[in-house]
Length: 81
Image (cartoon, rainbow, N blue to C red; front, side):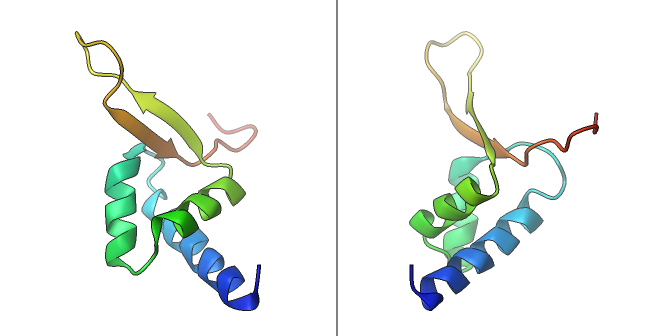
């Protein structure tokens, strides 16, 4: 990874930390759309999410089979409840 890519991933990490700072789950598709508006491509956002160990879980729709998408949340800190 070159220095430009490293800088873009660092920017994406900072953006993602701010976007998820409320501690609530957010739909991945919504985050990706907002990131694109901020000039962050999806691949870079996903790379940043991996570095931050973002928790990814399916969103289930009550009464329907399968799931409606994915939600992302910050990992819980040890000792936090």
